[in-house]
Amino acid sequence: MTKVLHCAEVVPGCAHTMEGETEDEVMQQASAHAASEHDMTDISPELAEKVRSRIKDE
Ligand SMILES: [Zn+2]
Image (tube, rainbow, N blue to C red; front, side, top):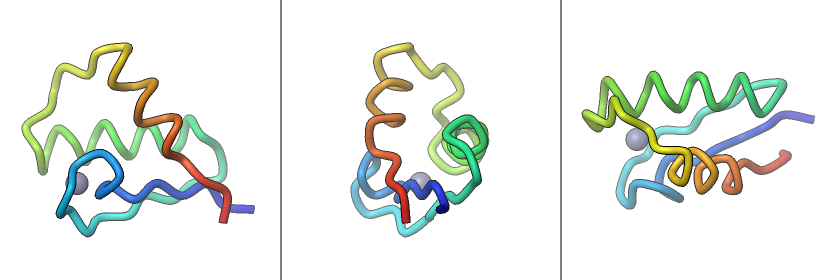
């Protein structure tokens, strides 16, 4: 089972997909991607929770 997050679920139009073995791994990738691609360096707890809820098992 792989944890998958499609960035478009959070940032419409972005084709980037993050994959990892655990939610935490995906969240780390997501924060790095958000910072480098979307200038989102300050992730609030609410946003982190929203992102985490979009992670799916594939
Ligand atoms: Zn993105």
